[in-house]
Amino acid sequence: MAVAGPAGCADLEELRDHIGDCHRCPLGSTCTRLVFGSGDPHARLMLIGEAPGKNEDLAGEPFVGAAGKLLDELLAGIGLRRSEVFIANMVKCRPPGNRDPELSEIETCAPFLSRQIEFIDPAVIATLGRFASHFVLRTTESITSLRGKVFEVDGRRVAPVFHPAAALYDTSKRSVLEDDFRLLREVIDRDEETITTGDALATHRAGVLLGRAAHPGDVIALSGGLGAGKTALVQGMAEGLGVVGHVPSPTFNILLVHPGDTRLYHFDLYRLERPEELVDIDFYETLESDGVSAIEWADRFPTELPADRLDVVIDVADESRRVLRLKATGPRSRRLARGWADAWRAAGAVTGS
Image 1 (cartoon, rainbow, N blue to C red):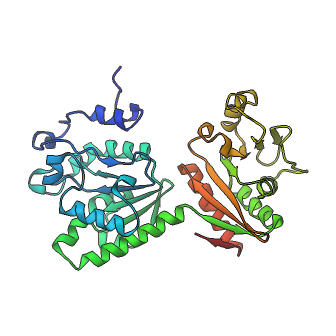
Image 2: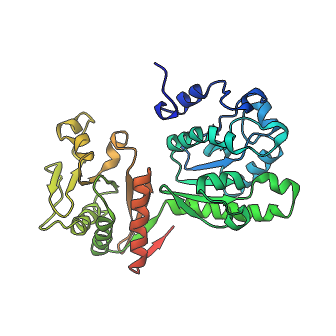
Image 3: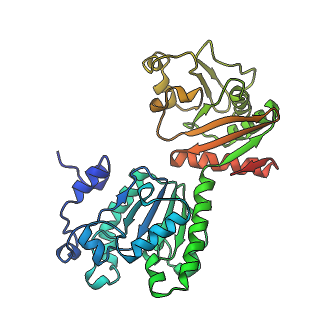
């Protein structure tokens, strides 16, 4: 059965098939081939340009000419390869003579780009040039005034930068682009927050702030060795969620449920041996409920965890220092990670990156 539109597509491949040999606007009749985009379909960084040029039109790939070579150099300068990011354009077909895309052409392609962003779910978007920046940020400000700043749209960080082609015509912009990409590297690194605590009491205090930042439906997946402080963190979360009473380790119960201002579901997967056992404890149904779920030893069954979750890996650096590494894998968990880390910083605690 054919999908009704971009919203009915299940993944990038289906979206590409849906677009097909597109003639939804006049550009389909003048281009050589459609340039869908390429790269890692689960990239944390997505680059959005304006439109394909002559070389891209011939190759069917984005940024393959001189601007593409410069883009590769800029990415390499911040420790990234093209294969580690996803690159797409505002419009998928080359405008004749490399003219600017018209509003009607942008509007025709906009649902496809929006769906690409949803599927890739990048933590960070770099908008290359004026048109992409205007579309993603919903603004009309000049790229000169936008670059060098970081915005948040729909739970993602957005960093506008000059289009690499600008540096081909004005070499003075090369150093500005390099500055933009260094900022981009900082933005990417900030997406993986790090919280440093001391003893179990300090870890408990960090958990209190996590509980206060959490909302029903949030899933926190905890990993770390024996004695790392996973239960201390969950006990703090319980306090932050308004749970009254003692919160023990659920090791011998697998799941403990604690009512509070927000219900806390506390899992411990240490004793489970097979993913099938998760069904017996209503694991999947519980994660979709109206409470906050904290999962100790979550790394035992990583493929069974929801796509949108906050992974917290606790490393014991020494007797007086624990490092909590936060990795958010979806828009909900990104908001949670930032809210928690911001609250920890505001409380005067020690954080790093």
